[in-house]
Image (cartoon, rainbow, N blue to C red; front, side):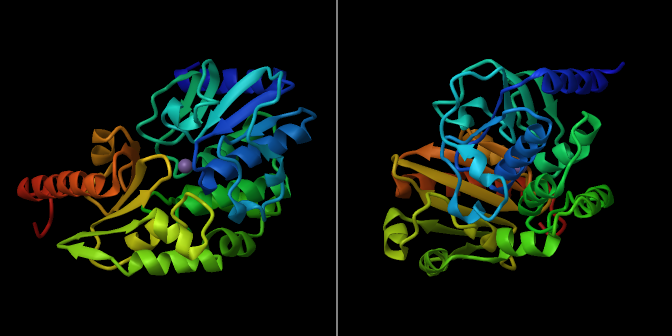
Length: 328
Ligand SMILES: [Mn+2]
């Protein structure tokens, strides 16, 4: 039995044995964190278990359409017998109340995953943690139904921005076909998770896009606390503006600075090949994937903006002077 087969066998045994698993994912949860969490939660319930699904930040309103999302709480139940982390590369990103060891099973697709679990299933080739679960839950003995398939499909759709990222493979699309055969309705989930925007989110986009800057192949803008108030936007997240920036022509690298209440700034990078923005994010204690990474940086907005822009420009110049770029 090779190492990966052993990992699968261990996960299968632990999942089968557990009665009250605690399943957690990262702060400021995205669609993949929520989709993978709800997806595995529903199949374990189907198998007669009582899973406890916890996000320290709770469930953002825009994901409430998902059947099973009502199971997500902000605090763990008293007694649980197995702790599973999903879609989280760094244990501290689970949040203060959830990042205590041991994590028995760590399932993730981030290349920067720190392997903090007793068992680690980290598969960076998969475009979403939900895609890992879609493939392996049935093989571990937990079949998917309509609602669990819908949750996992949502995770895949959001992490691939609607199948737009370069890591979308024929194999992934076959997996998606299976999810549809199990009852997931692609058109509905696509609209709810990726297209629909609330009115306050649209106002927030307007405020931030109004100060969009472009310098060579770098595009950036800022969401301030003041913007959030003006727009009436309740979340601390970016209302998906990061993905809007990455769609603008001529943006080899885009950055969104998102001012937080805590005296920190959440920075999100997106890039096209050959830029690997996870390298920049790691310099600031963050992480992610080559085309999409983030970091949370302590400091006032203007200072964070200055240093991040300088490091990012430096990285882009270094790459171009190495002759890596076709036209560089
Ligand atoms: Mn993910």
